[in-house]
Length: 232
Image (tube, rainbow, N blue to C red):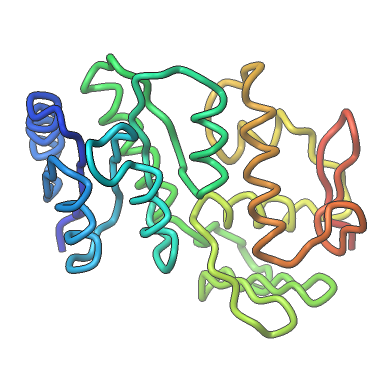
């Protein structure tokens, strides 16, 4: 089955160009030029990744992101004409996986799409050698074979990025993972001054999902000025 990508932008020239580049990579692409058309597509079709422009004339990209994250975990890349931390933090808080600022080179967007799809398709499939596929810590259970997360036997719906963060910390439980190491391992990108905020937002979102209190954490502890740890 072909990888199916949704691209949403009211600037038809940009949308069509992105569609051509993605189709040349062998992806199946659905193009939408309004938020309402995109909303219908989200409800009626199955996608493996979405590229959403924030500034749409009817339903904005953030609202579409909320719709997707209500019950879907595939990666979402946001397009924005404003390179501001406020937009980025809001999107990350809602569950966005990456940001691309306009104007951008189509090949840059294609590279980011490929990076997100690699993470999505390898979601939970790290080679664990002879180790058990199950990691269990204080009621938190990660099943690498089933690609699942449960807390007190209740299923937790994680995005691939959130899962990668949780899995990396769990695989290194008992040790403090520096923020830079976590970012490089999960995002596979160079650590920048803004990267710390990116990690913080995703950790906060992940804590909300697993019912972790930042002030009295049961699972993910923040070692101020260093990084994060899940204790044995």
